[in-house]
Length: 198
Image (cartoon, rainbow, N blue to C red; front, side):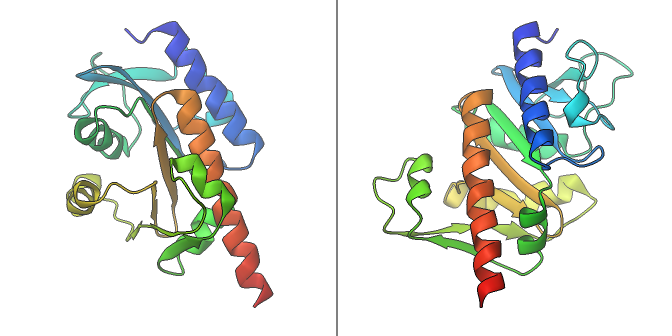
């Protein structure tokens, strides 16, 4: 049901994220678009550094329902589905729980200004300020998705964070999503270091 190449790409992204300390324990979730109505996503409770592509990546529809009875997708599947539904160019979504994302998201709003790496998000210059939205954590994922949606559609962000939780990044493919997440994590790490210097 999930193309093997897509599952393998997600497993590789999980290993890379794990090597950077972004997905401790069973934290995080990874997904990729299969077609207009279906996505591949990590199943619940899987360590992202040790994903078995044949077993740990499952197919769900855009309502978050597994296509194979009895399979249990990530608890945050609806947040992934929301992004694919709202933005057809998105081909993959990666979510991690790095120290920088977790700590900074607990301190309120996050803004990045004058970093050269902002160009990784398609900006023509580094001479700008970009906001990373931070949303309150909520164990009711459907309610959280409803809260996030108006802001997503009003002004698509470069990603977003959930307070005390982690960061979501996306791109046109698994590899594109990975390097955009890497750029986000670099920005978050820089901001954390800058706050230590004050």
